[in-house]
Image 1 (cartoon, helix red, strand yellow):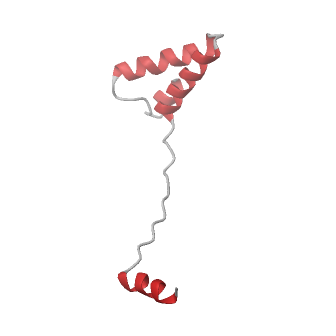
Image 2: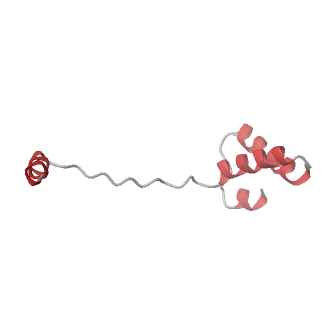
Image 3: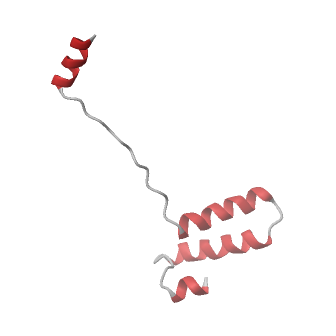
Length: 72
């Protein structure tokens, strides 16, 4: 949390900062695996950007479609 504050990476909302602090405490102190995983997910949601998905779309023209039909 100190490094995030030094690099100005903390959220602007003080409630979000408090939630992040509490989730870090849960992540380090709880024995329950479900709670630890939920806290880890919350920390990652705050600190890491989600990967972008890449979609490749090909658009066929009417001429391409007619050529396919003619080949059959």
